[in-house]
Length: 170
Figure 1: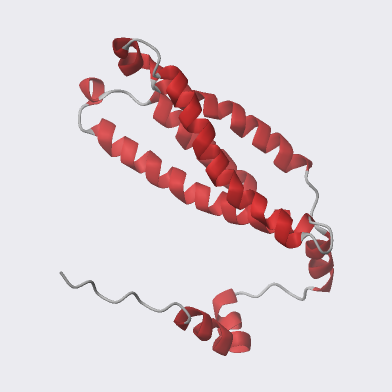
Figure 2: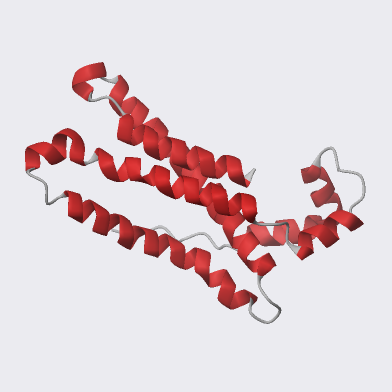
């Protein structure tokens, strides 16, 4: 599953870099752009959650909190690096940047996907997952029903724990 989210994230990023212009395909261009960004965001959410779990599960005993911060920091490191890469391409003459230069950072994302896929394939299951899988019983047909049946109170307490924001008065 995590490999699929990583591949989807990479495919959408590269897709943005290869997207035809409005002049070429008309209104389909912005529709495709929004669709790709939506898929990219969904894939990012799945990838980030999986990375956080994997990092914590593989962390040495007593160091889980420290290791668990790295996926959080990865988001901000990615923002800094992407801004630096974009800044380098902004040094191009404006007509070159507008015609093809803006696409290169998106296409460079393919390199990160290849590295990510390589790393993901080389990671073994965590000891925690292996232990849980060995102790697991038959897969549940409807997991949400099982969760509500066995831990319903905790599920509802968790849902209710976030207090809604009060409406702003103007």
